[in-house]
Each structure stands twice: as structure tokens, then as C-alpha cells.
Amino acid sequence: GQNIDQPTEMTATEGAIVQINCTYQTSGFNGLFWYQQHAGEAPTFLSYNVLDGLEEKGRFSSFLSRSKGYSYLLLKELQMKDSASYLCAVEDGKLIFGQGTELSVKP
Amino acid sequence: DAEITQSPRHKITETGRQVTLACHQTWNHNNMFWYRQDLGHGLRLIHYSYGVQDTNKGEVSDGYSVSRSNTEDLPLTLESAASSQTSVYFCASSQGRMNTEAFFGQGTRLTVV
Image (cartoon, rainbow over all chains, first blue to last red; front, side):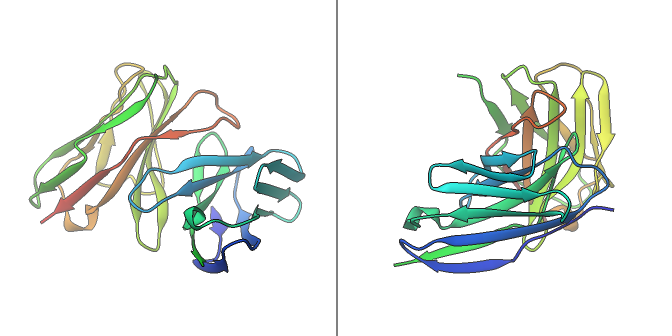
């Protein structure tokens, strides 16, 4: 079966750093994607990892450990506009999503 | 600019009616996907296609069907709408079979009354 877990909600302060974790157990794995989704909008691509290690993209970084079935998304220098849902997805020819983490950034 | 569009953006229908949601992409992508999004469940895959005449069932395919007669379109049909199918539906497309970014449409909010 497919099982992808992430926390339902997180709260952080503007200017801080937050880490959103994702664990997965899936029958297939080509890579792991992170998407951002603002309320009422479509998901948009943030990052993806194929190999173990850290991928950095400006204020956003994503880490993958395939042996542990684990990934995280790190957001630095949080801004109010980062308040959104963050979706972890395993790709095996199609994207299988976790339930998403609702991040609230407070002043 | 290439894009992916869904129509209608909002629809209200009655239980038992057949409903078709349209998805059209101009990226010339091979792969197209339909998801539904409900509170507490995230995005769940309904059907997907890797090319013309190819369709596959996802994890929540019961009560839905798709057909792929050309590269650009993957319409989603609800054969007999049920209140449990009230949801936000997203269409997406991507090019390759591995590790390629998927682009999402703006979504269709469907209410079945």
C-alpha cells in the first residue's frame, strides 16, 4: 500500500525557521516532491529530491533519506506569505500525496 | 504561454445526474491526472493517463471515468453524481514518466445536492 505521513498543522513566527517532516512507505519510488498550496489556489511546485541529501533553493531546502523513508522541507526567514499548505508527494510515475501540512506564520 | 485550464470553475448539480469536468492543457504533455481534494485527505488520485487511448485507475476511481482521445484533453465524468463526490477537483499534467514536475489547473469546486 501507500502511506505518506506529515503533521496536520504547524505554527511558526515570522523570521524564524520551520521544518516540515514527511515519512513514506510506498510500493514504488522515483523521487519525492514538495508542493505549496495557498488557500483556494492550485498546488505549485517547490522542490524535489531523487538522491539522498539536501537540495537548496533560496529560502527553501529539502532533504531526503531513502533508506529511512524520510524527507523534510526547511523554510528559512519565514514571511507572512509563507502561510500555506505544504504537500509532500512520492512520485512513481504518478504523484501520491500526503494529507498536507497547514503552516501558519504569526507576526 | 502554455497552460492547463479547467472548466467549469464552480458547479452545482443534483444527485444522480451525469457531470463532466473538462481539463485542457497546451503544454503538449503526455501525462494527465485527476485528483480530488477534501479536508483531512489531501489530494487523492482518481484517474490518470500516460498518453492517447491510455487510462488508469487511481486510489478513488469508483463512480468516475475518463477517456483520452487527444493529447490536450482529459475529461472526468461522474456517471451518477453522489453527495460524497462533493469536492474540489484538480487536473494536472506532466511530461516524463519519472521525476518531472506536474502542473496543476486552478480546480473545479463541485457541489452535489
